[in-house]
Image 1 (tube, rainbow, N blue to C red):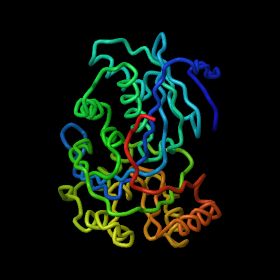
Image 2: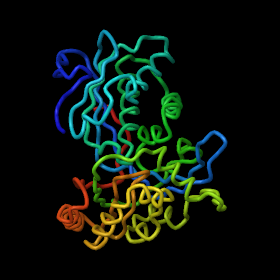
Image 3: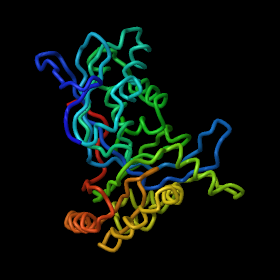
Image 4: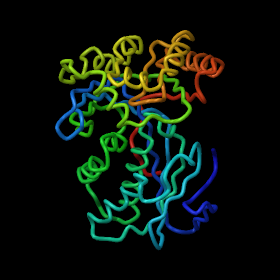
Length: 315
């Protein structure tokens, strides 16, 4: 679905003359997602190697009489337009921290696949934080914004930072990583979403009774990122959640096989899925794999993007 909606279903009527701030935020792909055993708090320790990719959402903050969310773009009928939206929670959190009311209209332009394992909701939260900080002149430091991001969700800090980073803890403790070149990707978007808690629950079920190792970043993968070697990176891609995602959505196996048969260097489920990611040699190969995936009938749409991409930025 493409359009502009708000909680009442009416057309957005933002006053273009009003002061506003627009922030652009990238999607992500996990080139390594190593998952430890479930902790006592229900979370899992991770070694999560994030790579930001050039698919973006934009969040525009405009003064308003109350907190209001509207959205336009792909599949906006699948996202909440009330206070359960992570962008709304971000605005409320920043406002509460600075003792002000969250009187803001947040308009989200969606281009990141919804519920696809590419951190679209986290990107919107990071975008809302940065946009409201600028709109309200709160003067929040980078450290404060990152701390607020971590309160909102495990992937939100990386959406703010972008580039490439190793996430430890729940994924929120970031160490920037060097990237020595441009990597080309094709993303196949599936019908419907996959619940992240459900995928982690299936991971726990599949690994029950086994010795789950402590998650660690793979030296070969980090070296491939730093050198910009796509072939080496392809050989090192891993996602410990992939067996769980495939268990819950077996049809994704056909998508992975179609992309690999079309010449992708490697294929994996992106994060908790159900979007699948294909690393390819160059832009020409990206076009060929994208066309083959569409023709295979195993996915709803395909997207082509390069990485790394910068993090959240005021436009």
